[in-house]
Image (cartoon, rainbow, N blue to C red; front, side, top):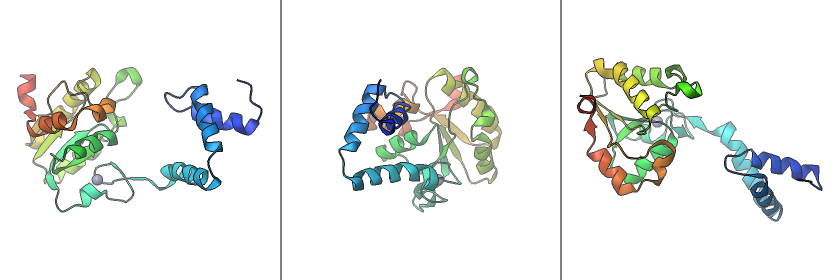
Length: 204
Ligand SMILES: [Zn+2]
């Protein structure tokens, strides 16, 4: 692409680094921004830069939060004896949308994937065990994707937590999780959380 302006080229290059955005789409977005008022563009760029500087991770569950402790962990209405383990913040959002879960979460931040060089130490598994050692948790729901990486991670977690004397369950398999979870309809996802399956039965 031949640009008439270096500034235009820089902006297009930044947009085209985003997943799923090619140069043509990037150019369309940049030209759209250029037609906005200065105020609108400032608000846009401020929202982007604050993403990195202001957003925190909850020190309990590691969900994305504006505060040290997220709203879910801080709520007195939530049952702290049930932890739902999920891959990332999209899963928390999808489960919250079902209004079927009153416990709290633990966001591990990925799945074990030797192919991608992601091992257990790269995930927030030790932090989960730390929460369990406090002795207040009675049940763990392993709500990870039904992929090979999800299965590997669930089995690894199971081995780590089985001696804590907890109820361990998974949600119905076949539910697309991880990146795809947000597209699962709320009724199906909500039902699979309510009718969760004890994990031991799965591996028997
Ligand atoms: Zn939290």
